[in-house]
Amino acid sequence: MSLLMHIIKNEWKSLLRGKWVIGYGLIFLILTDTLLRFGGGGAETLLSLSNVMLLFVPLVGMIYGILYIYQSREFVELLLTQPINRRVLYWGLFLGISTPLMAAFIVGSMLPLGWHGILMIDGMASAMVLGLGGVLTLIFAALGFVFGLMFYEDKIKGFGFTIVVWLFLAILYDGLVLMLVFLFGNYPLENFVIAVSMLNPIDLARIMVMLEFDVSALMGYTGAVFNRFFGTTLGITTASVMLLVWLAVPTWIGLNVFRKKDF
Amino acid sequence: MIEIEDVKKSFGDLNVLKGMSLTVPKGQATGIVGPNGAGKTTLIKTILGLVKSDSGLIKVNGEPLDNDGRYRKDIGYMPQVARYPENMKVYELFEFIKGLRDQEPVYEQELIDQFTLRPELEKSLRNLSGGNRQKVGATLAMMFNPDLLFFDEPTAGLDPRSSHKFKKRVEMEKENRKTVIITSHIMSELEQLVDHVVFILDGRIRYYGSMENLLQESNETRLEAAIASMMDDDPQEVAA
Image (cartoon, rainbow over all chains, first blue to last red; front, side, top):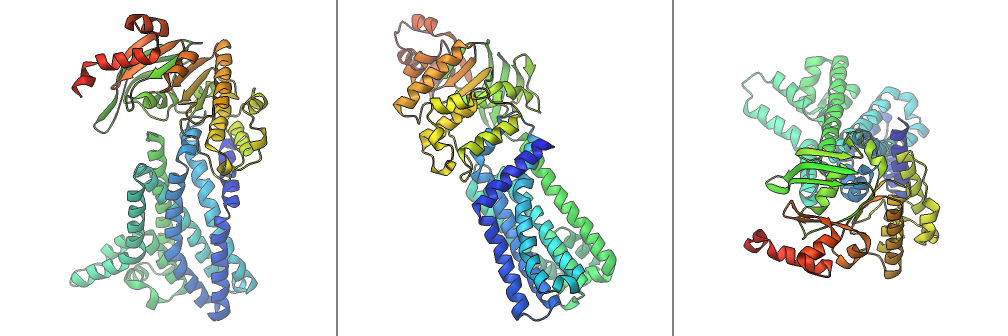
């Protein structure tokens, strides 16, 4: 346990000194503050913030994860020659780099929400947007780790794959689902749509935001079906559980690839 | 002491280690030589646990390799390319590795002085020259006084003075009955540092024995000539 903390702390120190993470937090701080100053009420701001969050947090998390693997190759190899277990090293590195990124988003967005008083008024909604951003950071940093380890020798392929996965999940997915629904409109598709939306963590997060804010017009097709099928409370619970599965699966795959890999 | 029995490793279709067996007794200084791509680095990485062998058995000090990597407490490794997190300072790296190994260093200060690293301690690793980074790697490998020392092309980036100091240090480690394993393409360096040679060709061990024997058998006076003639003699190499 202390060994794990030792590795995590080392990554934290190194990241803080890189100042990159602080800049990332500042971007969300400025963005949230600007939205609050010019964007009217709390709920609207939170929605705008979550739109930005749903788009960029996955991209940054994934690029960050894969970049870490590529940049730290020799260092990780040196650490692997020390008397430590690969499992501990994996968790140390993963938590060491993903938690500061998560904290940067949460703290950066939370501060303006705090000083504009939104945290007090829309506490639940704020907490949800911030929490979802945090979970998405972890999920996509883990995916970045997995892609980095899988395409260890071929960085171009690794980055290309990362960008394509992001484009697919963040932008194309809902459109594709809608197209399928349009093409097969004569068949009962509810179960299919529910299943499909479970397969995309960004979709799940968006659905949760929309259910919380009860803005069905912005829900997208999958969100609307989700809402009708589950209702708000059960819908949010189901989506949360699925997000946790989404968190567990890539980290588990990453761990196993890391443990078996030849460096 | 290292025991290797019929170790095989392939990467996809490429058979890198085609059944290697080797016993390196305690206190022996061994040089691993062979052409590029012969499997030298893969062999070392397999012993270190960086690469997992497909079959065969490896024991370090009588213990088979385990997943916890505890056997690596007895191993110091200096990699061929030394790169570290850029904004970490030299002394922080030393502290970090100390915590990781949970061992007290024996020769830390001595090595820092020997390799004149003291003025570099407060610098970020990014600002270190390649040679100084190699010296940091050498210090990390030796400061915990491990029984087994692995050096992968150790003097490639060192200036003559540092290279000389490094060799002196390795000679001292030999006198202290450390098992030393060095890969190098610089044969004169190996002549100086090791007394046994493993010659690897195409994933197999072609020669393993004392340097003297090798020179006698091949009727050469220098290691370089002996190795070159062995490469020439090899039918596979000619066919290729």
